[in-house]
Length: 147
Ligand code: DQA
Image 1 (tube, helix red, strand yellow):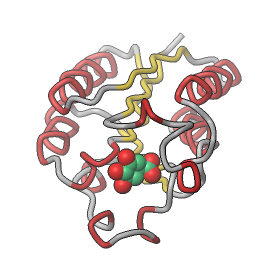
Image 2 (cartoon, helix red, strand yellow; image 1 turned 180 degrees about the horizontal axis):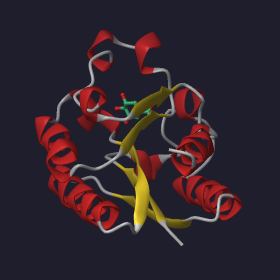
Image 3 (cartoon, protein in one colour; image 1 turned 90 degrees about the vertical axis):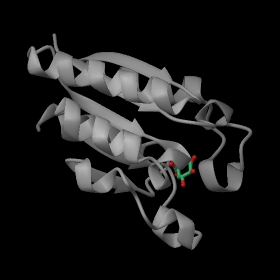
Image 4 (cartoon, protein in one colour; image 1 turned 90 degrees about the horizontal axis):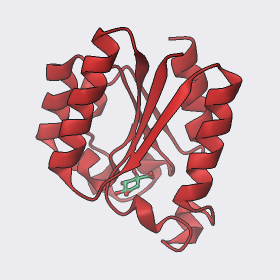
């Protein structure tokens, strides 16, 4: 059974209490449960993580790229949080590791502040999803299942 990685960046541990009018009321544990269900439906194994540290996310992307190269993983759903808009290191990690990444955002970043309109992840990503709320994670996993 192949693995799907779901990596969440900074502040996503605060889901449920963080600006619920933007991100909704579901917690990160709820997101994990939803991802687990989606993976089960597609015959995939879930590896779900969250970090507030850029370097840790870089290391995880390297790991995901290696697993993919060995035929053990289908790809990664990455919600890089605010690092989306700042991190050349994450861009380089995705390209360098050859990781197949779906960039995901709970909110529609293009309907928000101008500083959220640019993404360093998008040019390195296979696909980009934004604005479907938490259910977007399941949609991204469905996309990876047939990628
Ligand atoms: C986010 C959007 C980012 O701009 C923000 O910094 C986040 C969450 C989203 O899921 O909508 O932390 O990635």
